[in-house]
Amino acid sequence: MKYLKDVWDFKAMVHLTFDSWRARPWKDLDPENLEGQSKKLRKQLKAMGGQFASLKGWQVYRDIGDSLDVMTTVLPLVGELRAESIRPRHWSALARVCNVKAVDPTSNDRFVLDDLLRLGLDEHKDEIEDIVETAAKEIKIERKLMEID
Image 1 (cartoon, rainbow, N blue to C red):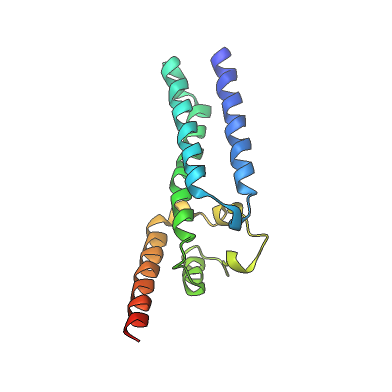
Image 2 (spheres, rainbow, N blue to C red):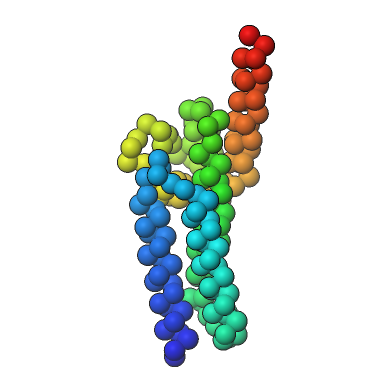
């Protein structure tokens, strides 16, 4: 029973942590720091599983792992989307990929991490990486053209 309570307490702590992250404004996000914290949470979860092997079979344990998996996928994408090469056209491409009307964190001071998480970035990882890669290539071309001018 002690292990069951511990894992439920850990789940509550993870969700409180993630909820505080979700409320952070886009301009104040530090995805690398959040990734580090997420990795620490993952290590703690694995340590709990190592103490009591049957804990890994519990649904609550798997649910925590699933939540951490989503953050592990999304946070690097958020970091990439914060690149200076991302322009309004790239946000429009992201909106099309995520099947929403519009996404533009730069025009709204109230845009928070949760606004991106609700887009299901983890389900569109490859497409988002393509958008970011395209943006990076475009900025290189723009800079070369400026050098030539």
